[in-house]
Length: 262
Ligand code: NAD
Image (cartoon, rainbow, N blue to C red; front, side, top):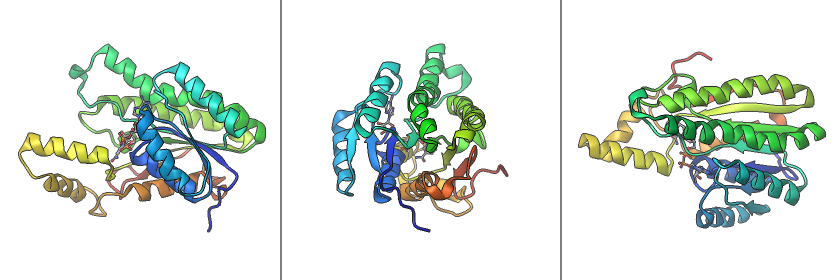
């Protein structure tokens, strides 16, 4: 199976680093032109240069996805530049950790804006063109917390479930127009962010950072963490023609760690 996305245009959110950048690289290698967004103009420019080196056209639009006005600007720029958008990868940083007692109303509202409303509002703006052309791919990067909630991540456990519920319902609404929507759930994946988390845990528990990674790997049936590329491969597949009948699903890329059968 050869995945060919030449002539397709994709918007990838949170693409300055980590899983968003890895997904953008995978899409570029399959031939898709790209619109990438993140908050930092500098990091976005670095990412855009790396993606252009893959031989595709790249538009970087600095965007804070918690701002509906900035989402509006992003969608407008994407549609104006490429005429239509075929593939949308909804992604942003994860909501902060904490227990119910730790988190305020403001924390909850900020997390809803970052994790749920960013996907809803960007999709609202890009979906009409997908429906009109009867071809579209929407992929939401979530977390295995929607398969098996993680203690101490109450915001992620709650609001990512809303993303999954939204996507499943939207799948029924847009399916007749051949717009395909799915969620992908990373498990432990070796991004910079995970490295920072490991450093924090190592300092807190007085153990070596390497030990933190070993502890994580021991919880995974495959006994290792994922690379960002392994995660991105699934995003690229879901963006492809070959994935046309994979719809309304929530796929874990977690080495078997989630103990949920669906
Ligand atoms: P990351 O923090 O490395 O990257 C997040 C990206 O989103 C960055 O480009 C950042 O600039 C961008 N971003 C953050 N807030 C933004 C905002 N308000 N507006 C625009 N852009 C914003 O995270 P990652 O490791 O690549 O993970 C991506 C997603 O997957 C996150 O939601 C994370 O919680 C989730 N996840 C990651 C892992 C993992 O192991 N890496 C595991 C489970 C879930």
